[in-house]
Image (tube, rainbow, N blue to C red; front, side, top):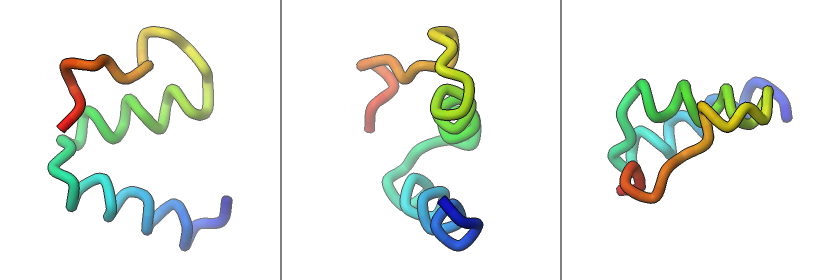
Length: 45
């Protein structure tokens, strides 16, 4: 994924109402796979 695609992903998540913490945690989960960053059902908007 290139930087343009990453920027569009972040913009899309912001448009969907995600908080900065939710976006950061989601990106950390994608990169690391650590369960602590995995999105929870209650966090979906």
